[in-house]
Length: 112
Image 1 (cartoon, helix red, strand yellow):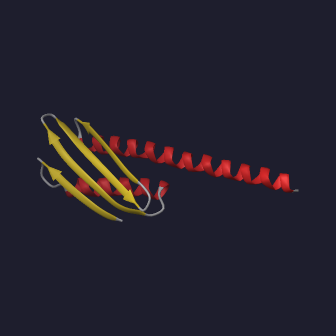
Image 2 (cartoon, helix red, strand yellow):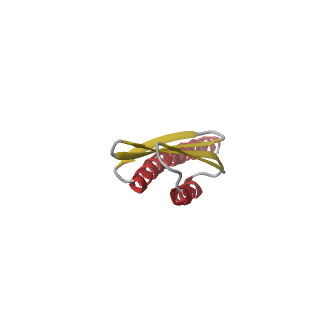
Image 3 (tube, one colour):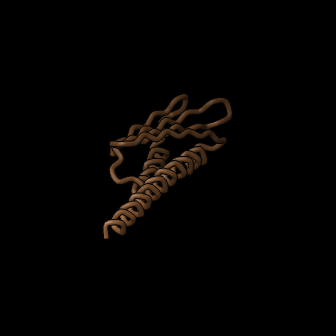
């Protein structure tokens, strides 16, 4: 997976990059099979820090953002929002797969 980091109105932080990369990889390994790219943008405005995250794959695109007084908290908030979206996607596919199996069993029972 390709990572792209950008920092707006703040200095580049290798520790922040390493932290974000590690946390994103944990979420991706848990929910997605083949993510293509992740673009992470960190910014600061007045008294808040913010983070935008875009994750793209073959058949999906996710975009989340959050802001907080602390940058690491903003990253955590973004990842929590991303996990929520990924869980909804996983549940959606799980339900559709279950409906498909149920329909197949009904058809087979009618044929028998």
